[in-house]
Length: 330
Image (cartoon, rainbow, N blue to C red):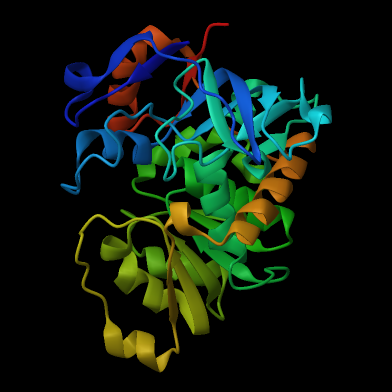
């Protein structure tokens, strides 16, 4: 099969290779997917770049956990009716060596989710890591109908989907952007469909702006930069609120312990590879329904050819606001 891989960690142009590898074969309970589109996430580029100094988990890694395609082989114990089914996949390179940056990837059968006819392969390849993380951030602590949610960084992949899922579930959603100049970027995303208000964090008084929309305080916070926003979060939360954080700028963040204690705050930290299996499956089903109902707006760039994987990784590391995808040749 035609594939991209790395045998050591480092800069994308230095370590990523493209060429021929042996075709994988599904084992018991697994399916093989002929990949059409591979989705790239910041977690994929971090694994490749050795950002935490961990050793290579496998001698060779085919990157990327997200993708879409068609099931073309099934392992023992998997019904043959799945053959030929369009699917989106998640977790292809989660505790596994062979991700979606290849013509074929093998995953457990429940990680290949049926893709409705109305949903493109490109959208399907965008659902995995960001969508499941967003779903967990919104729903891990119960339903949100009638609640107020503050979602930081709504131009980002995870937070954008979190805001849309929360709105779909009946929450009042307040989004934030880093700068006032970012507000115009939301206009082309039809954000008025899912945001009740947007607050720029470089404005005169962002806490007051949030309180104008949620005078009794917000029930939930979806946090993309815990180290930067902890003081703002505690200023706008009601007692018993939950902060669901999936990222931080500072690796060892300081936060206002006593104010959060007195507000009985719950801090939930989200590591997508290790969510409970049932939570991932629930998220996958909800995301598929939302996509089929056209309730998810996901900006993505024209897929790049697999040969340009190093350039694609650099785009992700540069903070591209559109999802970066690879087109995998048949």
